Length: 206
Ligand SMILES: Nc1nc2c(ncn2[C@@H]2O[C@H](COP(=O)(O)OP(=O)(O)O)[C@@H](O)[C@H]2O)c(=O)[nH]1
Ligand SMILES: [Mg+2]
Image (tube, rainbow, N blue to C red; front, side, top):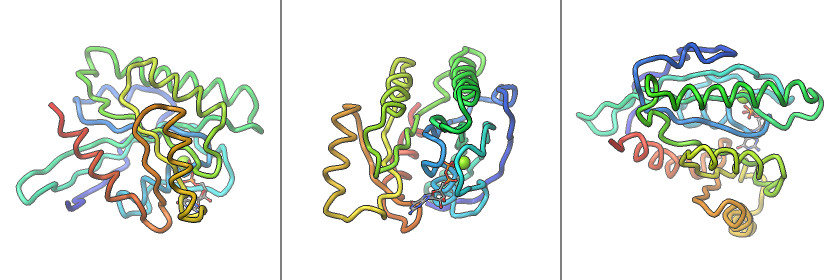
């Protein structure tokens, strides 16, 4: 697999930009500071997404268009959608609302026949491996499921945990969601290959 090109194609608080020709979209959802932008950068092997030490900086929907050669003669285009983070306490209710609004609008728009056709292939729900059982994450997961989205739980920052704990954390995440779980690290690259496989498979689906 070779990444040919990545462009930030839109960065907006709204959904107008989503009325694009149908593509395979992979949506990144998670608490503020969970490592969404870092994961996108690690996957695309470029420093395109802005990362930040302090939470609550992004309330835009950023879409990265990724062109990759899956094999020598199979080129694929996938949009990575980086949604605003939730659960940022200091921003207060207003920020929480704005997340809910943007997210709901996003998914509603994506479900419209005009832009849908199942173009959202997968929601990657990012959860900090060190905090694997937070209410806001459980709520977000329930929300994604209730909207019928195929969701995979991704435990981020796995490098901060001793290896011996990976299994236990994966189990906690799995028992909570009942779905597929993947632990990874944008820092040391653990799990990225597995995530690419999942992404390509989901995008390939007709
Ligand atoms: N140790 C470690 N820190 C990470 C990892 N991914 C992100 N971070 C840190 O977590 C903070 C938030 O990352 P960012 O990608 O901006 O989070 P976002 O708000 O979800 O987009 C930054 O200080 C990152 O350096 C990781 O895999 N391991
Ligand atoms: Mg970010």
